[in-house]
Length: 176
Image 1 (cartoon, rainbow, N blue to C red):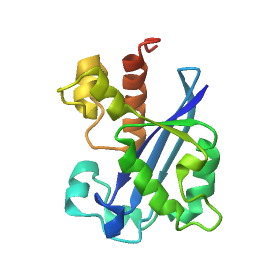
Image 2 (cartoon, rainbow, N blue to C red):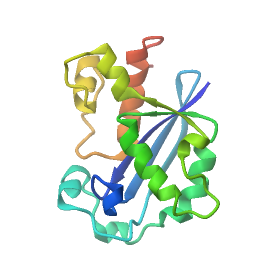
Image 3 (cartoon, helix red, strand yellow):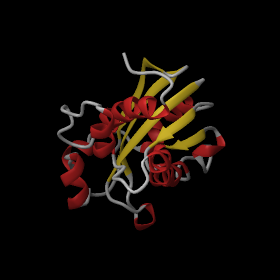
């Protein structure tokens, strides 16, 4: 079974208000084992990053201006995730942003779920830990996952952390 643990960073909270993806990070799991295969891109959003978002991820407009646009990386992204199950924390947020970007790409599906299944680890965490904090940092602490390298939110780093948490929460194997 092939799964892709995915995270994004964005310019803000609402694609309907013009916010865009600025980073995508994916970590591949095959038969519940982390492989060396990843997908990671920074993306020029063609707009400024909101101050609140910048405080979380530290990815600034000057850096993003040198990066490719989503349309330039969309087909490579779709090829990487096609046929896999996407494992995403608070999946609706990321899927909404991905779909917003895909609709801007000629020939791309309007919905990433047309080429992938989606599993929401936030919903899973809420079932496993009702009434508790289930954000990524809280889950990492609860399950003993090291986040000491996490100075900022970062899509690839957070996808790796989520992969570890997901494997522990689903309990079929521990990490190496």
